[in-house]
Image 1 (tube, rainbow, N blue to C red):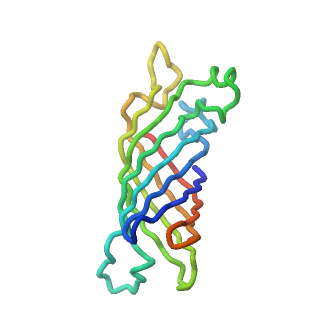
Image 2 (cartoon, rainbow, N blue to C red; image 1 turned 90 degrees about the vertical axis):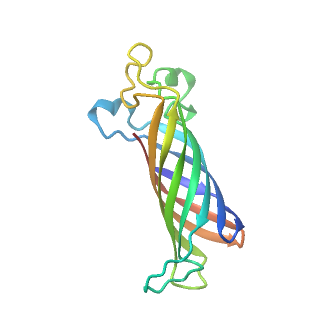
Length: 182
C-alpha cells in the first residue's frame, strides 16, 4: 500500500493531469518470497484523466460532480533497493530488485459529497499495463530474487483517493494504493 499526495492541475473541465510521489512497503504474499517482505519503495506517477459523458440511467446524478473517467498513467519506482532501506552497506546485502517503470490504462469514478457546496470528493480507480524491471531472477547473478522472473512484467493497481478542492484549478489529494506486479 502506498500513501499518495497528488497535486492535480486541471487543464480544462474535461481533462486533468496529476503528478504524484509514492512511497510504501513491499508485502510478500508467498512463503517463497518472504525475504522481500517490508522493503521500502519510493517512486513517482504521472496521470492524465479524461471525464466521460454522464450515463443515461434513471438514477439521479450530479453530472458536474459525479463522473466516470478513463486515463493513462506513467510511473517509475525503486523496487526496494533505494535509500529508504538504509545506508549503502546495508543495501548491498539486499536481494537485487532494481527499478520498475511502466504505463497503465486507468478507469475510475469520482463521487462528490451530497452537500452541493462541499469541496470534497472521493475517487476510486483501477489500472493495468506493462512494466519493465531492471533486476530479475537469474540463477547466477541474482538467484534469490524469486519474485520477478523477467524484464517484461505486468502491473496492476487499485487506488482510493480523498480530494479537497483548493481552487478552480488545483486540488490536494491523499489516498491509499495497492500495486501488484505479476
